[in-house]
Image 1 (spheres, rainbow, N blue to C red):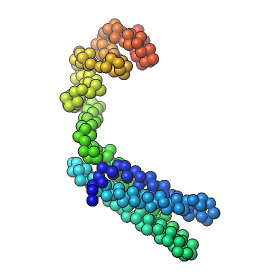
Image 2: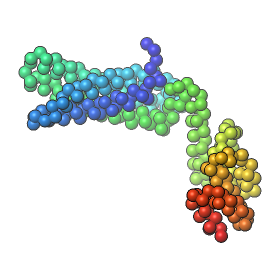
Image 3: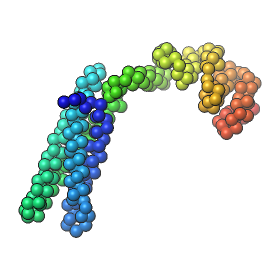
Image 4: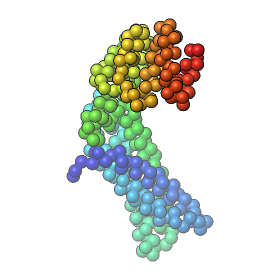
Length: 284
């Protein structure tokens, strides 16, 4: 059978949505039938539970197909196995729910007494509640894989760009953590690594300026660097940011007059930028 690994992120959300709607609707149908209300709920619950069970089966197949590369990430194997175990448990429980729903339909169509069909629906609701618990655990562990272990970039599409984004996110987050923890040399080193790997990224160029100022304490170097950044002159975002950072560095070096000269034309050109205007007014 063809691998379904690339479908896992999409289909798993269908399973969660359908089943987390189907089980409560089955409970509503059971309580509503006592009072003669919500007549549509009985068959709507069956439809949602059958569709959700099918999605759960595909989710498990696609997840098993995808788990190999994720499992090889150092430290991720235990989390992968827990996610897989809960997913399989949820699928099996909902296969039981689907069987009970079909049994109830068959009993009703075969002319059996109402109490037999209702007993099947009650059993379906009970097993469904257990299934929701297992499904919740599977979802929680799946989220842990994505957010705590980065178990996904480059796997779903095979595009190495995803891996580069993962590397960049890791370098950035660790640099920020190192700076906060009082390790400026490590923060500076990681920022330079970002700049070396992504030399055309304007955001990273400004991160280098920030690192020179905060980590290396090299204000002249930071000023020379920010002035060297070739920003798109048609982009108000980058033009004003360059002016703002330049002014901040000039102020830190004690050159208030030069900072005003940098900001004044920007405020005139972009009068809607209240932050720049406030900065200029504070210097005055």
